[in-house]
Image (cartoon, rainbow, N blue to C red; front, side, top):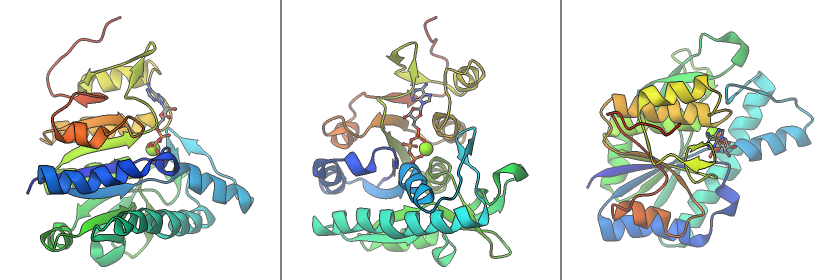
Length: 262
Ligand SMILES: Nc1ncnc2c1ncn2[C@@H]1O[C@H](COP(=O)(O)OP(=O)(O)OP(=O)(O)O)[C@@H](O)[C@H]1O
Ligand SMILES: [Mg+2]
């Protein structure tokens, strides 16, 4: 069965209707696509940090992760968010299994050179054997984006980058589900984007915040040979079913040049 990594943005998670999760089961049953879920949790982490009066900030869409921030990141991502997605899918009859990137060596990473970000990592390896073992038994893995470094340090990984690394390793399609209808430019959704256009949009500041790591992750996937990368709005009705059926929506990343108007 072909694999599809579905990255569920923290931006949209608590608004997604049941139909979205039902779609995940349907693409497996009707389209023979094996889903691998990777989730974010930006707003929930920020809310928890605020409650605990721990300061938080972002640099280029990446969260500055001090030790106290890291504790909250793990608690929220691998705890409440991971469990709520897994519970939701399980209650619909799926064999969903929640797993942290730090479990059984699933994700290893090294700390980014950029010290100002603190305990933020970039993925070095994805243990595909773990995923294949689960998928082979019809489980749906639900992955929280933390990773371990060689010396056993937990690291916070931007969920888009974690999803991209998993898609590359598993030779899977990558669907990035978020709270906007795609990459916007001058008020319109860009239906296609190439890696060169991505860097141009970042330079022009047409792409900012959390969209920066997302489009970079998407572009890198395409350059590494991933066949399908799209950014879609999870609130569009049956978005996943439509993607599975080859429908065009959101922003699709391609390797060859399609000009952006203006
Ligand atoms: N050109 C752009 N087009 C669309 N969205 C953009 C653009 N530039 C910046 N953004 C912002 O990027 C946001 C999506 O990224 P964000 O990281 O906030 O969400 P997410 O990745 O879905 O959630 P999480 O990071 O919690 O997993 C949008 O809500 C929007 O505010
Ligand atoms: Mg994000």
